[in-house]
Every structure is written in structure tokens, then in C-alpha cells.
Length: 127
Image 1 (cartoon, rainbow, N blue to C red):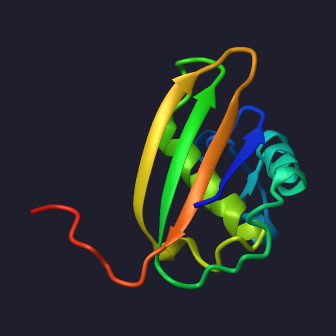
Image 2 (image 1 turned 30 degrees about the horizontal axis):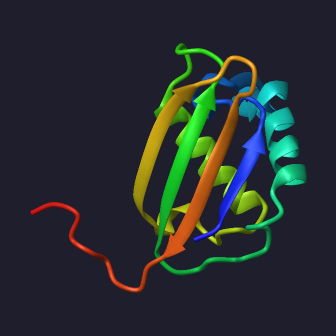
């Protein structure tokens, strides 16, 4: 299983959307500049898994080094899955059947280290 590291503080999507005026006075929700900047950085750095186009069930193994304890691990996972879809490492994040995730703190060097493992059969995770 190949591991890839993306440097920089991963941004949780839940905290980085903003409402803007849309058509007919309706509001629409868009990503703010911070999340778009992280996505661009991810796309530049992701080389090992780029264009793998995993289209079967997969497991995600991830270690997130946040710059502070105030960042949530669960918000990071959605951002990571969306970024993996953007670089075409995976075809659809709904194919993720298992996640093993760890949160660490590294004030000077925040990063995400991940690996993907395709699985042919859905294994029972609990009893």
C-alpha cells in the first residue's frame, strides 16, 4: 500500500462555506478562499494517487497532523475525500467503506498522510 503526504493545514469544509446572493434573490452557498486555496495546493502536491480512478470499494487510511487541537478530525476527512475525487484518485467518495483515521498535532509542519486500499468484498467490521 502506497502512502502519500500532502503538506499544509487541511481545512474542514464545514467551517468554510459562505452564503452569497444568487438568482431571484435566493442565496447560494460557495466555498471560501481558504478551502479553494487548500484544494489547489492538494492538487499540486498529489502525484502518487493522481488519476488512479479507483472505482471499486476502498479503505482510507489517514493520519492528520493539525497545527492546533482546535481543528476537527471529522471535518478533515470530508475535505480529503473531496480532494481525492478532484484529482481523480477515486471516482466517487461513496465507495469509501472504511476509514482508519488518527489525529496528531504538529504546529510547525501540519500535513495529511494517507493511503488507499481497494477491497473486493465488503468485510464485516463489527460482530
